[in-house]
Structures are given as C-alpha cells and as structure tokens.
Amino acid sequence: MQDRVILVVDDEWTIRMLVGDVVEDFGYRLLEAGTGPQALALLRDSGPIDLLITDLRLPGGVSGLDIAGEARTRQPGLRVLFMTGYADAGLMTMAATDPSVRVVLKPFDIRELQQTIETFLVA
Image 1 (spheres, rainbow, N blue to C red):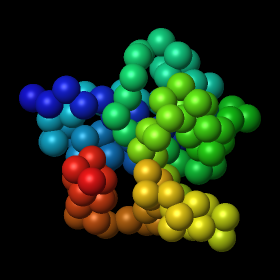
Image 2: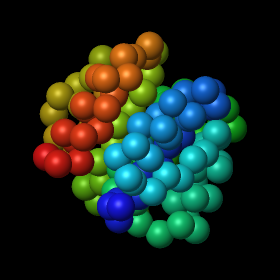
Image 3: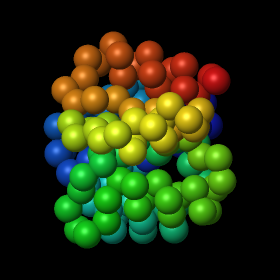
Image 4: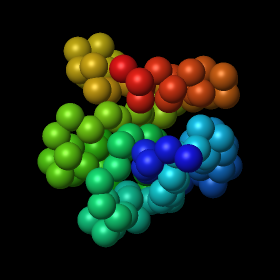
C-alpha cells in the first residue's frame, strides 16, 4: 500500500466512482468530494494530498480552478489533473506551460486516465 493521498472532485458520482476505482487500484488513499465547498473542507481538514483530480465546472459556487488555487496556496507545486468536457484555451495553455498541471478531456478512456495518473505521480 502506498502512502499517497489523492483527492477526486466531481459532481457526477459515476465519474467519482470510476476515477476512485483507478486510484484505489494503484493502492493510493482516496478522498472524494462532489462539490467545491466539500473539496475545500477536505483540503482544510485532511492534511496534505499528493494529487488533486478535479472537474473544472462544479456546483456550489466553487470551480475546479478555485479548488486548485486554494490547494496550491496550501501546497505550492501540488500536481493537479483537470477533467473537463469544456477545456478552454487558458486551461490548455496552463497545462502546456506548467508541468504540475494536466488536462484529461471528457469523455476519457479509462486506460488513458490510468496512464496519466501513473506517469504524473512518477514524473
């Protein structure tokens, strides 16, 4: 069992379940949130995380970018994997210029997600 902790944030429970299964298959500890405010509470209360995997658009008035910003304020250089069906030029530029940020476009292939998580945590 590895000591890494991964926070998965998505308002669709099926996506959280799918991504959570991948995370747990790697032996990582999983934290889950369905809204931005829930994710911020977990960041505040759960200690350091090794990877944030978040949807870009979330209910509750807090976006994936907001969560990533707060998480990286607490943990500079934290790796962030955005899952989105609505990627815009700004997000893609961020991912292209910051090696600690990656984007997976929905719908994604589960093998692509597995490979991205694995290589991202090793890099």
